[in-house]
Image (cartoon, rainbow, N blue to C red):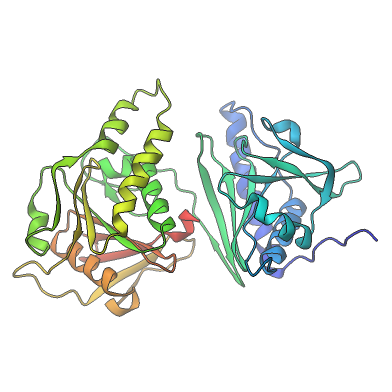
Length: 380
């Protein structure tokens, strides 16, 4: 008996039309700008079917572990060097769970396409996806991320996060940053100084890498050439770096021309910088990504009041700005980050929690208070 297609979870059904509309807009833009090659454009049924299979597969256990898989909608001929199965497999939760141990490493996708009879099948694996390819990943039990392949090499754009009965749509962020030192919108969904806003892709990579080590950490970004931050940390600084370590700075400067692909070097330098955030205490870098110190202990700046409330926001559509008490945002690391930004309003602090939450702290001039902006929906 042929396996029955997975039933569609009501939440999956609710989000599929909106995901399809998002992808349709992106395909239209690609046609206008003559972007090639691009992946096939999925319809609502395709999104529902693949997402339902992924959702039910995520609830299964294989050798005591939740399956971690990435499903990409494209035919074998639309990718480079695909690994093709001799017999294509049914798109079933049980089958996906069985395959998961072989494809759980980052960058490996199970290819899904319709056979001649119109049935969805898993045809093999690939590491290479064309622009706008629909990708649905299982992160853990009941937690899915729907994303699309971006137009830049190695970039993915999260569209929606589905967790149990909750659906969080990620707004389309494509901020054009002016060449000024003023605050500007960024791809993190929060206003940043223009130099940082222009480097939002690097900040995103740092955030992903910090989140990946699973130990939690705080990364403080201060203006280049400023020593004011020293008034907000316990002295002496045990792990001060002299001269500032500028590997990532140098690589980014050398890659500005774009003549040579330095992305592997950027990723390596980003991972090295994010790695030191696992040390107890905060890591401090300049807005040019120079490492100044790590393992620092934050202290309230002399003469500054204790922070009691912050502005809470989240990078999902419909998220409200809510002023709340400090205990609502997290533990000691979050409280210290809020105090640092309150005392050093030109700074930006990224905080990774051990449970996967990720928060960006910035001073909000409009509200006259610290803003705690959650962005983990961008990082999964």
